[in-house]
Amino acid sequence: MTRWSSRVVVAAVIVAALAAPAAAQSKPVAWDMVLNVGLTHYVGTVEKEFVEDVQKRTHGGLVITLRPPGELPYKLTDYLRAVGKGDVQSCDVYMGFTAGDTKLGVLTGLPFLVGTADELKKVMPALEPMIREDFARFGAEILTWYTWPEQNFFGRGKPITTLDDFKGRKIRTTSPEQSEMIKRLGAIPVSLTAPEVPSAAQRGIMDGVMTAGFNLLFSKWYEFTEWAYLPDIHIGGPSYILVNKSALAALSPDVRKGLQDAAQAFQAKMLKEIPAREQADLKTLEQQHKIKLYKANPADVAKLRKMMEPYWDEWAKQGGPKTIEAVAMVRKTLGR
Image 1: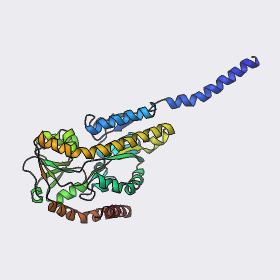
Image 2 (image 1 turned 120 degrees about the vertical axis):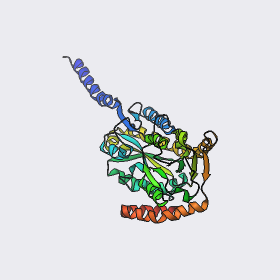
Image 3 (image 1 turned 90 degrees about the vertical axis):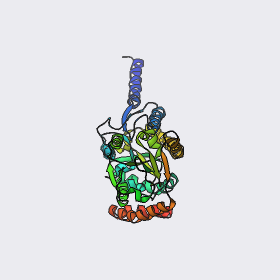
Image 4 (image 1 turned 30 degrees about the horizontal axis):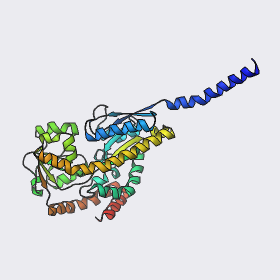
């Protein structure tokens, strides 16, 4: 072999060696993301935009497939652990469905503590690091979060318009904290997954649900709803976008940054658009679907808050020092 040809061979080997990592890196990473809602729900459509943005920002380096509830063998209450164990790489999980695993993650769902999206934005800068540390126990990382609107009562049959009207009524709840409030009102909490709600309403298993007008509209639950009682129980968030910590760490720096940038854009859109939709959606429910809206008397709201205040402290003590600290911080921030 001549000196010239040997140099060519060496150069070719070096080029191939340098190209190998790049070729390996260019192979797309495939993730699954389990959702709270179906793909035609407004949240599902924005999450579709999110995963498309991820693919664009990562230049095809990360491809996320959205899996609506029921497509994979995980209940909504399983999502935190499933992501932490790596059974699925990502999820959107509403705070209430993490209640069996975490206190801090559902703190803002304490009835009549954090009432609006603006109040949630005030408390999350201090609260999020505490929740992030708590979720890390399971191997899950908060990629971002957003919120649903204020939660209220929607039902059929005799309308609920005062606190006395709750006695004996069967209300679907999504967390132990909501269930405790229902019990204190003399009503009966009912645990149902979202897909079970329509048939349960038709069969009389429940008289009402706690949700937002936004969700009632996009889930088409207006088909079995006749009235709404609106005391603004608590803000409907956070809903957490979680990722498996090991899967996140395994991404290349560029792909990870693209994912995180897309998550920031997703959060900004959701925090702007969802709370703003609620009043318009309630109006649509009233005018187009003939649902009677009853705004709660301010005196009744004050009674509800006073009724639940002792529970906030009882609940915090069950979670230990960090939960006590977190509840105290939220109360101080909001003047409650």
